[in-house]
Length: 534
Image 1: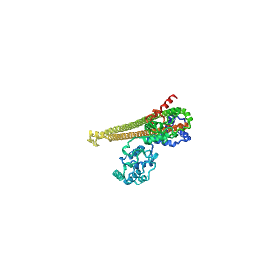
Image 2 (image 1 turned 120 degrees about the vertical axis):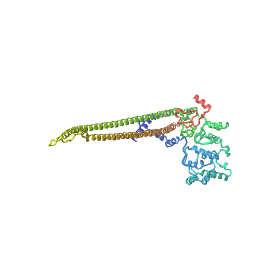
Image 3 (image 1 turned 90 degrees about the vertical axis):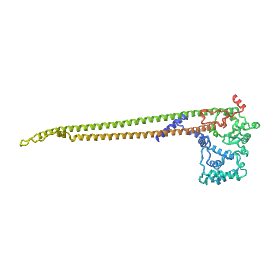
Image 4 (image 1 turned 180 degrees about the horizontal axis):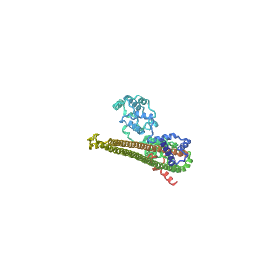
């Protein structure tokens, strides 16, 4: 644990020094303190950072529960419920746990939702899901019966009976847009997805553009304080309505500044960068002229962030290569240590075996020496026996005791030869047991070494997995730092947050920034000419 903590602190110091290029006494909290001093909501930026990883805004529990209780339980034969189910699926990609429903409760909730009708304006279902669940939705969550394999058939049968019992059930369903015709066959018309995440048909979008254009406080048509792309506005507006919907003319220097000063988007295709307001007060024309020099600082910020991305990628590759090299070095050291330990054990066993053999030879030599001495004693005894057998009685008669060859054989067969055989057998048994014990010790050592190798490989895999998991987390924090830097510079320079036309994607920031619409948002011809001449 201490080694991992030390490695983590070393990696963090290397990250601050090589990627962010901070001084030794600086930390990542300095930017957050600066943002708090400027009045920025750092917690909101952090939540946006965590939510942007999935590519979609994370819905609240209540809205998700309301969607599941109404939208995802509806029959796919109705246009509105199909659209609402699609919207709920797009709202959050992760599958949500669905509680079982009874047919009666579901029918009451379905009728209550349909009879309520489609609200207008920002509270429409086509724009956003309901923020709070209805009372029937809460009752569904609290009084859910056990799951039955036939609940789908009961639901379909209940819906069919409800549609048969109501008059004009096809036209009573709410539409995803209040401007849609009531004919279900005409509900396949185009629905435009706005940068703010709302969906609107052509008629509703045209009315929104006309309303925003009639407001003198706004330069560009907006929806939820997010500008509507000019290409989309030209697409939905007619030729007669297009001159009235043209945005107010902006000074050429500001247009050039807008084209050069690129503000990265917060997320992919559904979200935009955190901005204050799209409106440019007409009573401050002098301030717009002063913002001409801001494009240099914004461009420098973008270049610095691109450099940080390149350094982050290089730092990641370097850290991974160093980690692999360190693991390879430790692996080689472990193998060398294991080989040395095995060789040392084998040498000890060889020395012990040689010592045992020397002892065995010495013992046998000592026994043979004693046997030779005994043989000499036997020869002397044999001579005495022969003299005894060749003797005579006192009367002068011979004893007639002969020394035969069998007597000589019996004298040679002494107990010492058997003792040598016994000694050799005992020594052989001891040597065999010693060899078995040594082999067992070697096998035990090899098993211990194998366990140590597996433990080392497991720690290596865990360390590499932690490093792989740390990379996206650091990348998310780096993205959040970039957004915070952009917000701080926007607040410091008081740059109007707009979508910059004609700006190309930055290749090095492709994974962090994606333009909402791939089609270029073109400026007017007069503004292009004035930018080129400015």
